[in-house]
Length: 280
Image (cartoon, one colour):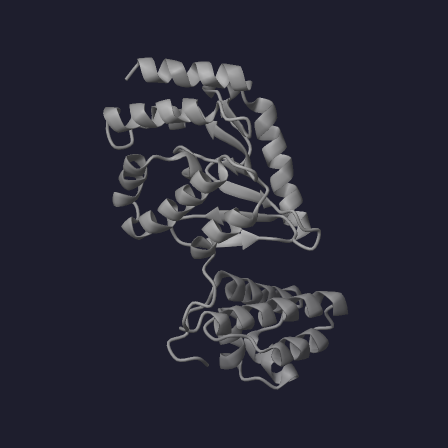
């Protein structure tokens, strides 16, 4: 057993499944242990996730309990996945950080679709606004957000402009980030960038009620080469990651389409931003 073992939720789920198999057959720990050749103590620790369950032990229990083969094979796969995750979590130098890579990926993209949950989309943020958003959340992110903004500055015009479609909730226009002066400057900047030919900016009004991807900001990138699949970047304060499988990207596409449907038109969104400015 690993030193200072702490069971994950998946390992606890495996333990509950093993306990369920035994209970369904009305066997005590001693009876079950005798049948499979385990001590009752070992079986109890497996069921209660006090120790990890080895796949060979799960296979033995499945055989002795006469569990349908697909069922015990699935639980085996869960245990193996838990073991793989535990090995991957061992301390090691970061191999790849999506947050650090994102500015470079944006530089390669031809189209960027983004949904911001509570602040202005990163690529449209002014320096003071970015500083205000990071100083109370995670100051270390300021440099990465600055690089994103700088990449956008190089791609917002010229021969190869980046096509951007951004959606944000109305609440983001009223979040007084950095004070009224900073927010007013930021909203005026939003109005300016919305006039760019390659930019589409839409706001989801409060009247829309609940909407897809609530509290889940994301950036969806498309690329010019056929061999380069779409990539979706997501982050929380705990981690950042790229989503690249076709099924997951399709889920993002569905939610973005739904957000677009709930949003105001570009003209209506601009009017809403202008109204927010007048209230500051």
